[in-house]
Amino acid sequence: MGVFKVSLQVGNPFSQTIETVDAMVDTGAIFSVMPSSMLRGMGIEPVENITFGLANGEDVEYPTGWALFSAEGRRGMARVVFGPEDQYLMGATTLEDLLLMVDPVRNRLIHFERPPLS
Image (cartoon, rainbow, N blue to C red; front, side, top):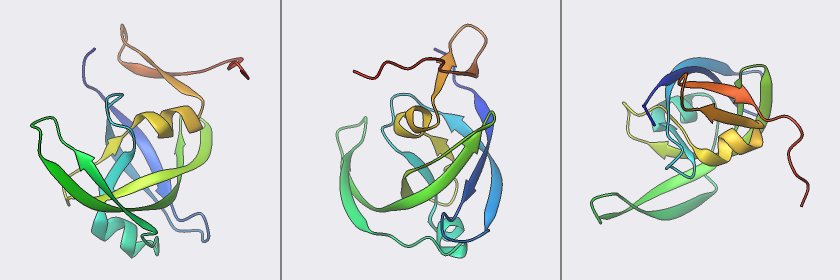
């Protein structure tokens, strides 16, 4: 699948603070990653540190918290990683929480209609 960007709104679920960013869609990443300074600037606080395995085999620890995400007319809350300053990444759990899927032919997000309950 090709790599592509989407317009993604990221916000603090407890205030009206929202920023729109161009984020890379990465279905191989579990969580979304946003710059730590951006998240902290919106008043989003870390709640848990998690150790992640990188593709090169290295382990890294990052703080995580909860953010409000909006894309393609869908809105929901998902875990977010307080990442490096140049990383804007939309991961798989955010896609799932927003009921969005990747159209690999057209490199775009589409609505997941009628998701299975079980």
